Length: 346
Image (cartoon, rainbow, N blue to C red):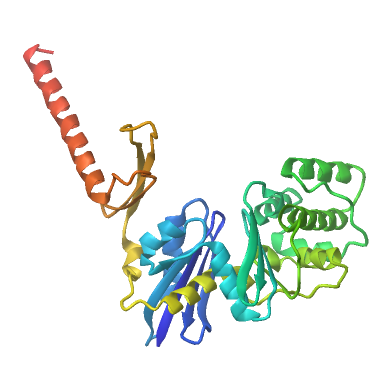
């Protein structure tokens, strides 16, 4: 069986999709990145390995997400694509007539305008967390409500209170103020869902023509309160579709793009990656006024990749040579200091 692997590594969550040649999802997982994308990649590979079909063979791998380049090196990607392309491809696969994509993830949100099967325009909000899943999670913890119950509780509200949603600080202050006025949790949560939707539309959709069907995807699409708030915003006049795969659409899109890329031989590193050790470090290059911070990824003690060298002078070989010379200099100084100490009798 020919299989294709898609990986989407975001700042909050990491998603894996294993897909067959007919674009059917064979296995998928949705994990917390927890500030350690390499550990999340290993955990995701473990899951895929445990659910790997006996006769399966990975023919291509695609990565996307904010850590797509790191994931591409660690896993061994044949193609690395931005989130807009990956999400649009998955949405077109699930709903071919889609005209607009709303995507709200853990740390950012996206609006994609699609016309005639092609991305015509897009917008991303990466500056403020007020319209993202991490803000909702934070408020769920503060209100002592499981995030899974957040949306259901919003649907129980008989009315919504007005919450200022443009900024996380103002929103939280406003929620506390409304609690002190005696409003219940359900009303406050419904107000928060509506505030998040207003924030999304004001920041991303201003000046854009929103046509349906709209595909709503990303982890926040599981929140029924947000889905209903979008429907209310449009007065029930827009068709909003939440696909069953809403949480892993980016990874699914990456897998589809990898299949379409069709490399003669995949760069996939195999499931042995799970057992390998990786290490990151950085240094500042002072050879010119740019003062680039060069970030280095080591695999099993060898330089695997690096980022941040604007002029391109640093390569895995030159970085390895630099640190060998630096280590030799340090060792020579230690030997010289030891000799001086012994000769002075100290």
